[in-house]
Each structure stands twice: as C-alpha cells, then as structure tokens.
Length: 117
Image (cartoon, rainbow, N blue to C red; front, top):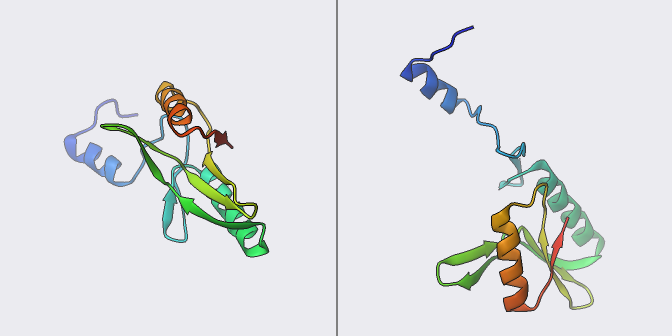
C-alpha cells in the first residue's frame, strides 16, 4: 500500500470524483437535477408521482429565502397542496448547527414551519 501520493496521483484521484460527503450522502441526478442525497432524489420522485395523481397542485425545487442581509436559507422544496396551503420541506439526514439556527430564524421571520422529511 502506498503511503504518499504524487501531485499527479492526487489530482487524478480528485478528477474521479472519489470525494465522500461529510455525512455520507450520495449525490443523485434525476431529470437533469442533481440532488444532495438519494433521500432527497427519492422525495422528488414521490412529489412527481403525487403531482401526476392530482394529490398536489405543484412543487418548487430549492427555493431561497433571505433571512437577513447576507444570510440565506435554501429549502429543498415548497409543496403547493390542493387546499391552498404550502409546505416548506427540508429532506434531512443530519441536522447541522447552521441548519438549526437558520430554521429558527426562518420560522420566526416567516411564521411558517419547516417540515423535515
């Protein structure tokens, strides 16, 4: 087993996309959209099925909300239900401190709850 890599070997390793996510999530592409995790991609497929079945009016991918100057929160989805109620959805495998803080600010500012999947 080799203990040290040359610069060329390391660059080749990076090109191959062998970088692991900090939390073990696997980026997944569907319909030209790249999702941060398989769980998020699966939820997207579920929303597409619900839309085709008429269970929801629609949904939006990765809406961005301005929490304060220089502070943004990007949700995974907004789901528009048939009853006129919208849900902000975040597909979570792990809650970071940054997410917890932004969630509190978002819910206080917009008076909406984030639904975690």
